[in-house]
Amino acid sequence: MLELKNVHKKFGETTVLKDVSLKVDKGDVVAILGPSGSGKTTFLRCAGYLNRADSGKLIIGDEEYDLKKIKGKDLLRYRSRVGFVFQSFNLYGNKTALGNVTLGLKVAQKMKKEDADKIGRKLLEKVGLSDRADFYPSKLSGGQQQRVAIARALATNPEVIFFDEPTSALDPELTGEVLNVIKELADEGVTMIVVTHEMEFARKVATKVVFMENGEIVEENNSKDFFEHPQKERTREFIYKSSTWAADAQYDGSGI
Ligand SMILES: Nc1ncnc2c1ncn2[C@@H]1O[C@H](COP(=O)(O)OP(=O)(O)O)[C@@H](O)[C@H]1O
Ligand SMILES: [Mg+2]
Image (cartoon, rainbow, N blue to C red):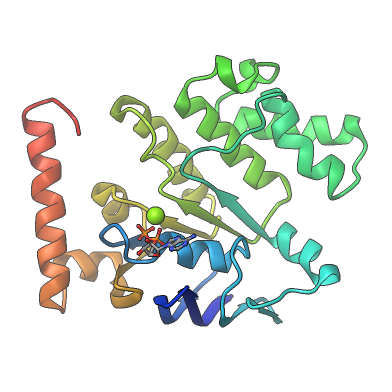
């Protein structure tokens, strides 16, 4: 359904992505794991065309986009097919929750305010925020802001949503409410690629897990086999360390 092909990216002289390829089926939830600096954000940003890749393609349905350059007329269509949720929410502070969710519909799709608001309110209800539609981001908790951002990403009815560490800017007690929303979307069959450090989420919600390091995919597998039978020593080590760390954090009750 969706395929990223040979995504290559350099920053200056440093190669950050070395021909990364990934296939995603409809309804898949792909978790991308990996240490900091391994290129996860860059990969998502190139896939979402927020950064230009040096080369690479994204195939979605039967259309192919060149991630080095998507031309103006294709870009609008591309943008409506691919949603993005950032680590830091990126909401407009001068717009209400509803205003943030409906902006793309009103501006990019030129929908009438009335129609856009109807969709926006439905989506806010879906993420459990129907009573917060008229609140500005500064009056919302981090978890609520991120749920608004998810509603915004859903507004254009994209075929896939990319999440870049959607919970890592949140206090531990707010992480669950955001992961629950993502889990509900997974249950509904929304196709998603989620960069995350949440191992339990990857284990329980993801259908497929990808481990990246140094700009390359080290290992990928269905979620069960990834965790139960990792093939590479480096993957085993990463899973072990991340899981021990999580267990420790839980044990002393101090969170991160
Ligand atoms: N805008 C940028 N300019 C230069 N180097 C960058 C830029 N963004 C990321 N990098 C570098 O690319 C590498 C991968 O970063 P990133 O994709 O953010 O990794 P991750 O999300 O896995 O932590 C890092 O070495 C980082 O320093
Ligand atoms: Mg990152």
